[in-house]
Length: 207
Image 1 (spheres, rainbow, N blue to C red):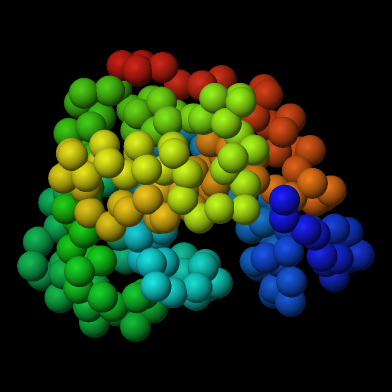
Image 2: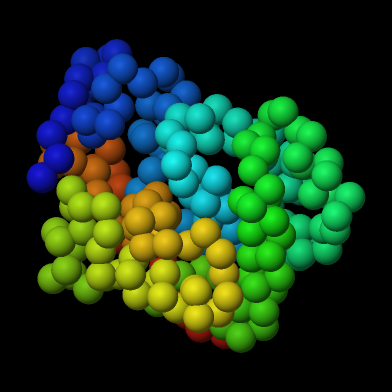
């Protein structure tokens, strides 16, 4: 199990918050692990987790508003229409991570997201299919790859998505609230648990 560390207010938080700036702590307290069903937020999370590969999440979080501007709020229907001029624009944007492979992957994945919505109704309906069963939840804590992340990665790769390896998908599963991986005693754990209990899971082919 993960341990906790005292935050600047003295309250216990997940150990990965140690020495973190206020913006990072706010992300931990109000976003990480809370269930997400909005398709644009989900596509953003998939995209940013892909950009984070090989980098620190703090780097990505610090640039998140720049990413949102650069990728039209992560509206995958708009991003799917990006062309070479957009790639060149993004490669010249010092406010984001200028990695051609990752930039092109987001555009490619936007097209795949459009296809997925045609099939399942919403991205949320698709991703929530991979929520671990209750008896598997503890197995997701303190690991970097889980059965659910392997299954999700494998299925997305089958659908030709890029930068969706099992480690990256495990981070997504934690971030979007498919599991509550806040440490025991963390100030956010109970709030996340309550949010998950009241959360209405999206169904396939829902409007």
